[in-house]
Image (cartoon, rainbow, N blue to C red):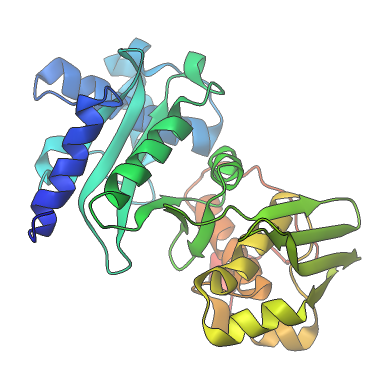
Amino acid sequence: MREDPLQNALEAHASLVKDGVLRRLSKGAADTRAWIDCELASLVENRFFVPCDPRAFTAAWRAEWRPRAIRDGTRLANPHARLAYSIPYWILDQGKRVGTIGLATSGLGAGLVTVSSLYVYPEHRGRGGAGRALRLARDAFAAIGLDGLRVPTWWTWQHAVRVYLGLGMWVDSWKHELVFAFRHGQPAPRILVEEHQATFSLAPAGDVERWITATRDGDRLGWAESPRFAELRASGSREARDAPGTFALALARSGWPLIRSAEAWEQRHAWCDCGDPEGLAYKIEIFEAIDRRCGFEVRTPRLPGIEYRDYADID
């Protein structure tokens, strides 16, 4: 393996193209327009819940929806303008285009390559094409010495949240958005959420270890950590660091409360980047307030204990 990180990353990109997983976006005007239309479709579907097919967009449709979809400052720019940082691809399934993805040309400090612009055409959803592409990309980057993938999304994009949790990804942070980590060789968490009890377990060596047990009581969350988990957390284990946030997100997806006590809620700012469930509750209120302020439609589980204030009123 060369010592040049960029060249190593580009070799991983090339292997995905060679294996028929991805196809590089051409610089032709029609191809570029089709790719940008997929980005616009993703925004419209997730922010307004309007079903759409980017292959059928007209100039009038774009003129109507584009300004509404990018009110938060999202850029729909020419994907070829950022080639030094991210390369745009078509996702392939048996040689046929099924969606889009952007892959960074290097890993961040944690050795994770950022994924962007992930979109799948409506008729190909639920068939595992995106998950397959993500797994193969993760493994390709691991083969050149990086840890895997960094996959950002928004809390209000509930379909994406469900898919990434279902793939066994871990929540890495929620500082500005939800960021999932998909590392090669990292065991997938085992999360079971029932009506009144939920568990977070891991099976690192085949034997299942229950790390956290949660219960719900009105607008309060019960939370019990096993002695083994407490030891791992104190030792700085990566999985133990990310377990509370990953579990909290799965609980939020099921409409569970995230606030354990008034005292724990007072500490929410300490966890506003990632960590304990109160930090996620705090950021969910912010994320949803921003989307409402931008005029986006919000369809998320309502979590007991959150006030859902306007952005200007959140302390």
